[in-house]
Length: 306
Image 1: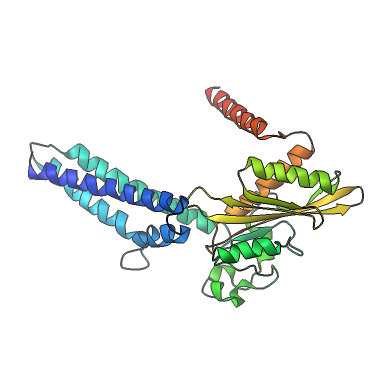
Image 2: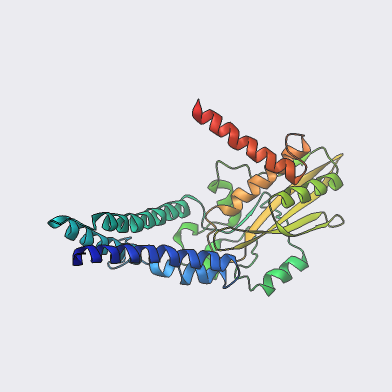
């Protein structure tokens, strides 16, 4: 084996080790070995910081791996015997994929408001119970529960973020998610019926610590995000309205200023799930929910074949 081929293998090993490192950071956090922010910020994004000059968005680790892989690829193809070029090519593909993933993440972050708290009623958002607030405090949740009518740039966390200057949570929610239905839900069913349906919808989505307080008219639960195990808290408020009910949803992250749109999607998804079950268009038990998802996959495959 030539030195050039060995160098190509070294480049591939470094690229593979980077994937292993990020997997450890992600799944270690998800398994509770360390805090989600430790896995995401300290173990992942710290290696993705842009290199000089600061205005050029070239992430440190992927850029270094790309340079090493390119040198290895050129070296193996420069002259015969051209051994090791495939290893060098694979070594190049991995950091390029990392770079593409980072660009996608950045694009996603820029496409939604830089917030982490979303509600369907921004004038009078559902409030979390004292028990949930205590659970957030015990988990050392960094995100505070702010009013929705306060300009975010007056708060310490957002002072340096120009995208929220002069805007409130309510304004950003109203304009930031045009493709999602984040409106209050008006239904004909009684509050007791709605609360039962909300509980089942949360159970089917794997929420943790689901509790219902019919007297207060709220249902709460915590959703664990697959990536890095971030915890987001959800509260659904059900109020009587004539012979029916008015239902509002709220979802907020415990850590991280930007949720990349996750909370808004969760609110829209849970809202639609509750509506579907109340109108007879959705399953009422976990097994039926799983079957529904399987049917959706089959239908997608059928459409793709056609």
